[in-house]
Structures are given as C-alpha cells and as structure tokens.
Image (cartoon, rainbow, N blue to C red; front, side, top):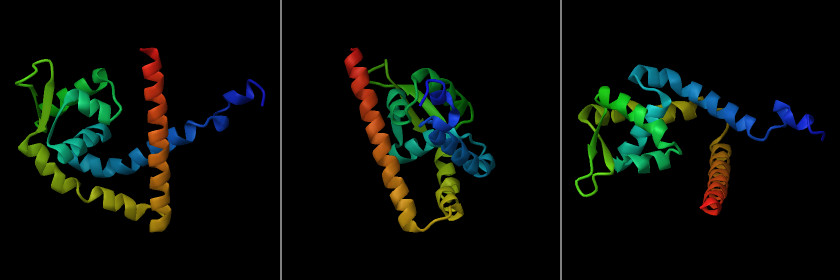
Length: 154
C-alpha cells in the first residue's frame, strides 16, 4: 500500500470505531433529551449510580477523560443540581463527587434506556454477547498498550 493510500479514510482502523461510537451516541440522544442530559453527563451519572460517590480523578479515569475535560462537565451538572462536589475531609486536594436527590431520581427514569436500545438492535443474544466480548477484549488490549506507553514515558 502506498504512503498516500494509507491516508484514505477507508483504510483507517480507527475510523469505523469512531463512526460506531457516534452512531450509538445518536441512538441514545432521544432518550437523553427527555432527561435533559448529554451523553457525557449520562456516563458520569452511570458511574455515580454504581458507586454513589467518587473522587473527580477516579471518575475521569473510569470514563477515559482528562480532568480539564471533566471539570467543566461536572460544574454544569452541579448547576443542574444533579451532583455535589466537595473537598475530601481527609485530603483537601481531592474533590469528591456525589449524587443529589435529583441526580439519584434520574436513575429510575434512565433504567429503561439500555433495554430500549438493545431492543432496537438487530441480532440475536449470542451475536450481541459476542460483540460485547470483543469490545471488552479490544478495550483492555488498547488500555494496556496506553498504560505501557505512559509507563515508558516516566
């Protein structure tokens, strides 16, 4: 393959994943619009619905976001009264994020979203399970590569 042939979009290994991510996010949007949420806000809420409270850095790490990306997102969510941010009592350098009552209440309204999206997918349960398994394997492989790369830089 020539040097310039490699630059074609159709030859990029990453573009299909990017496109799939955008298409899936678009599938979520009608449901999230009803809740007044963006997809990144929904992701933060899912983390907090699972763990109740968590330091900002841990949320950022879990969602693979930089702190300079997640901080404005959390500030908007705090203005919406979905979360509270407070300094950790033990280590004031840490900011702990936790759900408000309003944020917790959205959990019931959002509980149907994954099922509705899965109902919209074509394919049987085995195909969906195989796809999820592949996604997790790829995610862990790429994450391990990135961590190894970061460790080599230190």
